[in-house]
Amino acid sequence: MASPTYDYIVVGGGLAGCVLSSRIRQYDDAVKILLIEAGKETRERSDVHNMQVLNLGSELDWQYQSEPVEALMGRRITLNAGKGLGGSSAINSGGWTRGAAADYDEWAALVGDERYSYKGQLPWFKKSELWFDDKNPEEHGKDGPIRVTCAKASNRMFPLAEQAAAGWEELGVLTLPDGDQNTGDNLGRAYICEARSDGKREWSANQYSLDGIEVRLETFVNRVIIQKIHGNLKATGVELADSSVVKGHNIIVSAGAFRSPQLLQLSGIGPSTHLETFGIQPLVDLPEVGKNLSDHMIFFQHWRLRDPSAGHTIGSANPLFQQPQYSQGVPFDWIVNTGVPKEGLVKAIERDEGAKPNDSKHVLLAKDRTFIENIVMFAKLPFPGVPMDAKHITSALVSFLPTSTGSVSLKSGKPEDHPKVNLNYLSTEVDNDQIIGESIPEGLLVEALAPDDSDEKLDQRIAVTGGTSWHPSGTCSMGKVVDTEFRVTGVEGLRVVDASVIPVPLSAHLQAPLYALSEQAAAIITGKV
Image 1 (tube, rainbow, N blue to C red):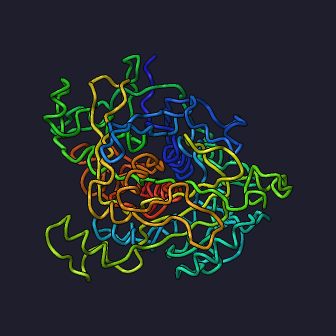
Image 2 (image 1 turned 180 degrees about the horizontal axis):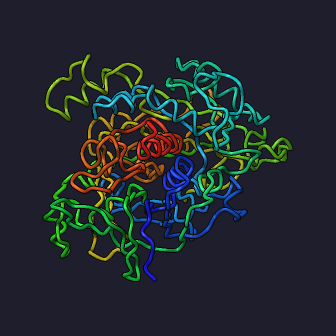
């Protein structure tokens, strides 16, 4: 008996793959959809439901390894990425942030399509979410699959929260209206929001119905089958790890910012000379496949409380922290998004580009650009040499608009080998200008463990504590690898839909933007918009 030919084969059952499969089926229940996932089932796992367990380093994590990062003392960085139904939405910390409208407007201008402006994305943000309160109804959805809860609804208040707020206000950082950063304006102090309900994780595989969809788990795809038909290249199926072939009319690659470009390259789509090095016949010479890797670098600092007996942090004897809400979600209530001083930024751009930038035209100098996310955690993260006790807390600074770009390429022609990932952090003056700054307000009752704030010492601390915040994007960029309908250049019937298509850095954790983009892509692919 001949195997069926599917209308859609979705390669990768991660966040995007589950949303796409679910919505395409909803829009047309007559189509045959095959969703292929290399990892395991997650929907009944209590360790995934529990928000406090991120499952990093587990069987649900690909654990890619970067090439040595020069700016980080030559360290290799572990790049956690979800391997299981729901992908990274099943192992992440749940953060729900959209970013600034200016980011999306830059995206739309770059690709010449207003559907990718903030206004164009807003309906899809709303379609994906079930917002926790009635504030800002023009900005938030009430009927979406993903329930979103913000800290102000958690009935908790960390003892240091008000001190931190006052400290930020002294620096001129004000609280956003309703503490809501998910309105297109994220510059300021805002409540942390998460994809969770009653302390439990919300993830794509669990919240989007996969009924009527054939799901193959623990199934690895070697490559996309591409044939020449009537003079044109056409994707006709996928080859699995056992060398069997599954046929499909439409192939959608949703394997993530590391695996999707690797899969295209293994299929003969990418830089020809690179493919030939590994004995792969180039079908489409597309040099930008795997280029433009953008990732938000994170930098940690550790602080000693001046009065540890006051019970300010999780882990102390303060009975406040025995209340259940303090074990639900991340150990902080607020995040603070800031810009960077214009004078230093202009000089850094000039050093990078060799000419003084035009204030009115340069995208980084546009109004309302959010460069840095600042987080003060009322707990201590594990780090060598710093005691895990209630005497210490951790702060984090995330670089949201990096101009340094890396790449994803092949290590070998073997599909089972992980790709070569060059992060290339801090390779521009602009990025170094961003990251050198305070990540905690002066008024907080703490003291730095490393009080020397010279640039040299700060560079050393960045090199030791810097790493990834798990937001890779751009490696199959829209406008270079795919068009605004997600179609891969030069191949009919082949699309890519995941974070790899996002062509510009977003001042956000990528979960919420990716839900919106996947919702939009499903409607575009099925002709609903």
